[in-house]
Image 1 (spheres, rainbow, N blue to C red):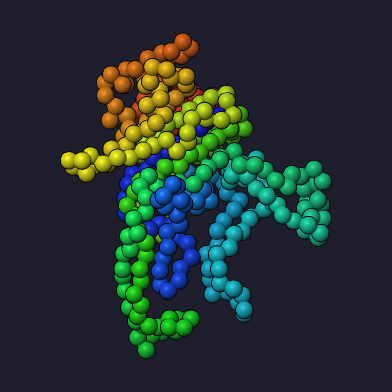
Image 2: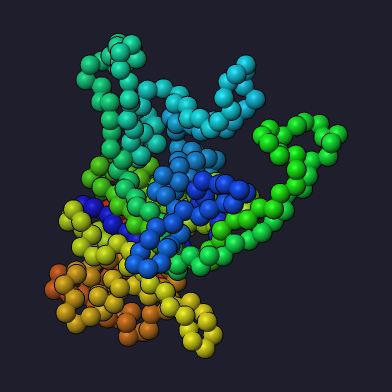
Length: 332
């Protein structure tokens, strides 16, 4: 069985995923769709945030990989972000090796060292059981720039700032967007059942995903679901458009109105999708009319209809119990 899902976040102003900077200009990374550019957040940023959440005090899962932040170092050592593995990858011992996979790009002496330690049959690669794609803003970037000014360092400051003009005051301008994001993810449920408690905590962490950008000093933006649509199916593909959430503005109030092309398809008379495989949660459930809720919940030829829950985090627990064959009320 496979799990396919699309998450819709809450909207907020953001400058949270930046590309290269030049001339004191911080640039949001974007993707072009049609005639407009949309802000994006990479799956690598979200996966790293999930690693840190799962290995943190709330979840406490064993982690092999750790990010080392820059330090003063020794001699001519370069000060930059680094990654450190405690041991060779071990999916049975470390949750991050199990959930996110690994690749050992070793050769020559390092390869011989690995053979001696783990044997010739040790796999150099493991695919991630979690697949993700870009988080894409629902509303296009509108060329909005926010200006701030950095203070000048006093001549008697305790240290000197590196680089030309580092001690001078500068006008900083950063691109900013006010939008919700949507992103798809998928899980192979059969592979996940080897460690159901880890896979369940992964879904729990997606339900409260934060810190995906690394720029929270300026933009506090949460990638947790405001709404979510999930399908549990034996198929190897979701069978619908992954980026299916849309937004429009109420002409009288300018409020955002979110809709889903998948939900519209499930409500249509000629719907070919099996409703019983779908789990729909969050604010988009609250906006459904009573007649639409009833129609989604009605059984088709096979099952009992879609599962609806206004709480996306509770819905993820329901899905985990179904996907990984856990007791419905089990706490993990």
